[in-house]
Image 1 (cartoon, helix red, strand yellow):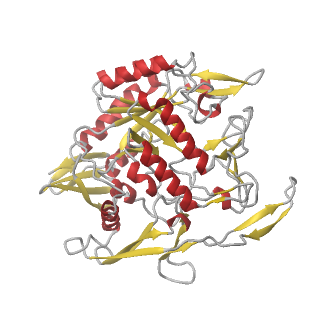
Image 2 (image 1 turned 30 degrees about the vertical axis):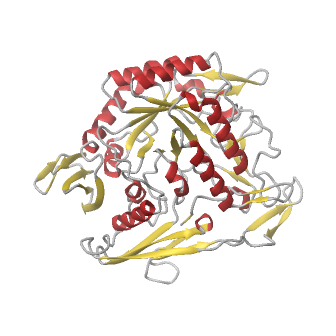
Image 3 (image 1 turned 180 degrees about the vertical axis):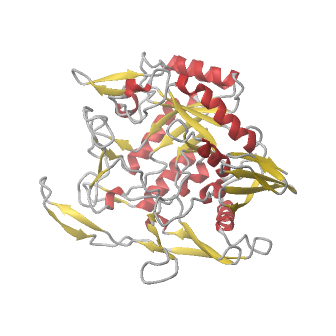
Length: 526
């Protein structure tokens, strides 16, 4: 079903991996699974207290493996098979680790009964989510945030990236610091006041070729003074603008790999080939991973250099890529050691600012203020009949949750209703100039970002989602029921007050408990 926290690049069967243009499978971001036997009858939810870094969740649907039952279990990996190359022609042999991984496993199983009116939460996925959420609150991994008022809106900006030039590379700028000020000011004056933003490609050489820990500014994008002035102006309007940086994805045009890039157990550098996704005229199409030690070091360095300019920092890579490392000297950084290093780093950094993290794994939720690019679908296996907001119910009310960028096919009416159903806020990535300017850069996948094309859609989508979710901000999401195909009722409670949000995905009006919900719309009631 999926590796918890994703595949470890350093212990994969092969050192290199080709990223295709098909829809990727979503890996679990938390070490938890559950089974319900009949709705509101019996069930359990189980999670790993230890060993989650090596956990895989295995699920077999009925009709497979010579059984008529669906069954699931956790699988823990203690050794791996890998292909050991001995030349650059690809010749080699399969081998195993001489010493297995050294770690303990501890699982907790919590059994659920009934419809939630008894001693346990309901024996369904909503009850499982509430049980796991309570466990994370009790252990300090999650803390209720007390969110109230209008929901937030996330507006990220792609500022610059690099393309191949006649000699070397050249910088392509599509958004300046002044452009960010102008656009955000227009949005706020248009009536959307709860806004925050992340800046991608703000450094000299843009998003893909600048060193992660550098704070080198470019006159064409904006000097340090330009950014300081813009951020001060935005703070006066209540808008938090942060520098954004991927702290793990690297390439050899950006930085040397010696003592910097993750090495596999086979002694080759772990690599990802993105030639299927990027223009073939770029300086390089092969990417690697920074070691956990370097990633943590770079986060601290960048924070020291720009942390005083903003109230938050936006990070990716460190948030959702977990890798071990096998160095030339024979020293090994294990997955648990990498987790401990990341937690220690973000613990120190988060003391002075908010952290906006892209799809963070569960061990970093304690430090997350904003969860960016929240997955809103299932894992894409064909035997799954529906997607359910398990992750969203676990995290609801503990941090701000943001849907994928709406300007990349997440803007249909069905998607807007999904945001309301899953209790997540809209997000966009924008630029001042047309995105075709980026067609020969590493950011070519950002194919539609021009603000002028989306200014009306931003207001429309935010208005629809905020109009419903602001009615339940700060309340506890306690249940979700699909009362008929295409009609969902979410229930929220707080201090004896109960409200429902009814989502009608169908093409016809429906009536639920005396409340009429028009076709393809949502209503807050109670």
